Length: 452
Image 1: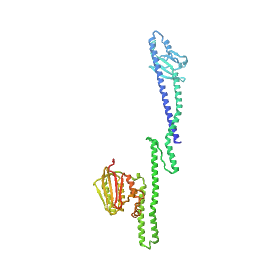
Image 2: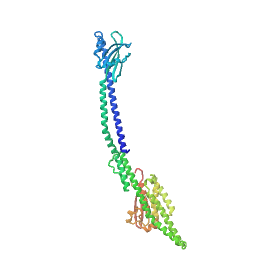
Image 3: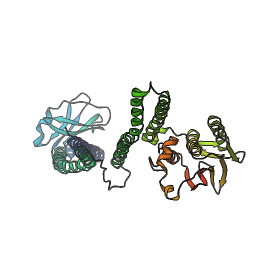
Image 4: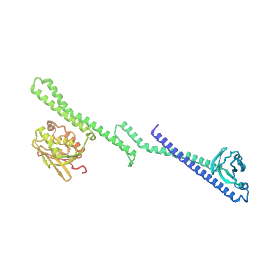
């Protein structure tokens, strides 16, 4: 069964059950109130008869007085304690009441009795008769009129319930359509994506906080993630095929050269091995960078915390200096703190230090300080610099200022692109200033506190 039909069926059944319960409650409550009213009225009537008997028993025989109080449809009788009848008066239409068994009650009694499918109110009241004996004055009166009214009420409630089913069915159908509409739109969008192989998003007109709007927003977010992953996959394949073609060609050519002349010329053998090794190392580094760029930032496991920047920069500079035998000077306050991810910041520093190492021969200087409400780390080299026209493009993927020089230095054109992504992920703003043949300065700005 379709979800729309299920919603329609369940809501209709629920509304009808509630309507039946409500009407049944109304009927039983009204029936109880009317029956209680009839019992109270009958008891009041018997008490009045008893009072009148006490007042007129010396002037008027009780039997004659009872005839005046005979119900239109009922019976009055006086029952002694030996269950004999002292007096009995019955309406012509209720002759069947005379067959009811006699009972003697010690106190006042009232109840509803049923005889031949008709209901009656029965009241028994103890009274002192004119001969001084204690007898029961018993009055039985029909409540057929009340039952007729209840039957009419029952019929009206049943008819109302049946008539109310029509708007219930219509409203449940409208409700199911309203609930299914965004789901139907989502299904249509999925089918269109499947047919056209193009990513599409739901148009959310309702800005409320309902679950359906939340579901639509979740769907759009899922589509954004799928599209981003798809684009990254396409970009990875395109970048890998574009960038790996050259080192693979170089390796193939040198391997072919070794195969033909390697044994005859030792100098060519050494040159080929060095070239193949160099290209293999560059391919490995570039593959790692491509894989890093292909990942979502959510998969980077970023852990932001308050850290000592001075200590982190000093340790990073010492490690870099020992690895590449290049002088790195750290200048700044003894303790400068910042809110960031230590591992990602260390990776970011390695990228810029490595660029400074490749394109400069002099000392590399790192400054740590604060400007306004921002903490900064500044990496300065005295290298060849970057031409002014190339500065806006240095963070573009595979962009190289000097193709031949970058190849010689082993660059893949991905380092600064990765640096930009890392900086965006940990909330760092990068400023790059450079003068050709004078050097390059990279400044990393980030907030010094979490709330800032």
